[in-house]
Image (cartoon, rainbow over all chains, first blue to last red; front, side, top):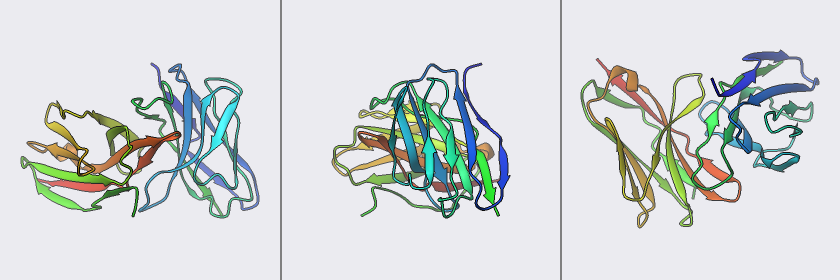
Amino acid sequence: DGGITQSPKYLFRKEGQNVTLSCEQNLNHDAMYWYRQDPGQGLRLIYYSQIVNDFQKGDIAEGYSVSREKKESFPLTVTSAQKNPTAFYLCASSISPGRNSPLHFGNGTRLTVT
Amino acid sequence: RKEVEQDPGPFNVPEGATVAFNCTYSNSASQSFFWYRQDCRKEPKLLMSVYSSGNEDGRFTAQLNRASQYISLLIRDSKLSDSATYLCVVRGGADGLTFGKGTHLIIQP
């Protein structure tokens, strides 16, 4: 079955440590996205990539980094510079960055930093 | 003014009733519109795209009003399983999408 896989589902880290969240898709989608969701807030865009080896900052990129070395993979690193890293992280993809392409989401990673 | 606004609710609705809620957007150049459903502690899932002429999928009807810059979602014959948060999503810029904060719907037996 085609889909987007995020791992792990739950992640716990100590403050000051970098952590990398995995996102893999086998939908052959060109565009991939990382969002963050906090309680009572809408989804906020961290980074997005429209094509391999290219990515753009979203609204809240500070403290995060990404890579897009393969079409299928778009890992997100939460660095120690991110002041409030505890959140629900959602990876998504779309067929193309075009205007009529809806997003398809992975099942998310809940990161807790203490 | 916020880019995409939704009434957070909750909307408490008896099973079998019809419920509707709106979403307003500020960017008049917005090009495409979607409704997503999100269950508690789960990822959003695409419910339906919203087309200019309006569209229906079973018990769900979506409408777009470009003049007044809002989209709507109507649910007929509501089921207990319709309880969820409904997210309005608007695509307008180069990076695409802006999400509303969602409307929380509770269907009561």
